[in-house]
Length: 182
Image 1 (cartoon, rainbow, N blue to C red):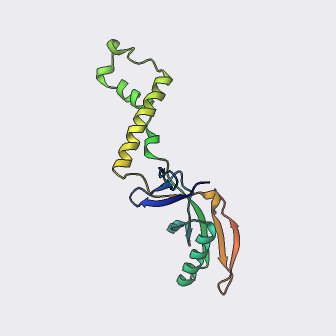
Image 2: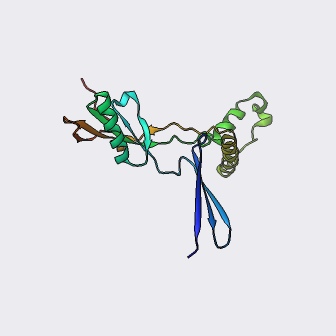
Image 3: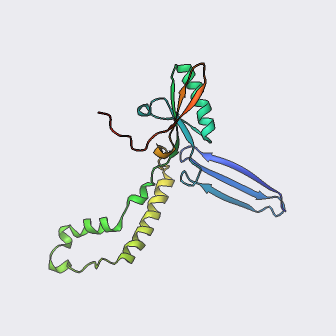
């Protein structure tokens, strides 16, 4: 077994965490970067789901503890806790077929002279998507434009109610699609 040390740094502008591990025996250093999608999803709390969610806590229990303290300070009696979910990364919304359609609608590509410029080969589209998305991802990273916002995964929302004197009671999971009230 070899001795290793790990230093962890977080780039606050990209929310990326870099672990740099050095093997003390060989002196070899390895680096691993975690993006928001590859990190565990933190937890947050809310008093009124329409008001938004606060904080980022490593565990549900930490979010509950912080939320109940904050709720008591503000005189709140309901608490919702849910797991944060990062948005899809922007480059995943670029599709070769959309670009090809847009190009095909241009006057330069209309008419008989350009009729067969592209045959709809899905393998070629897949190749183009992979290459363009990689360039887009590098650009987003270079300019620190990765999204940092989050949404709350509906399936993880748990409701708690203050039953008095700071005693919080589990009130069930929130329904992902509540029925409209008449």
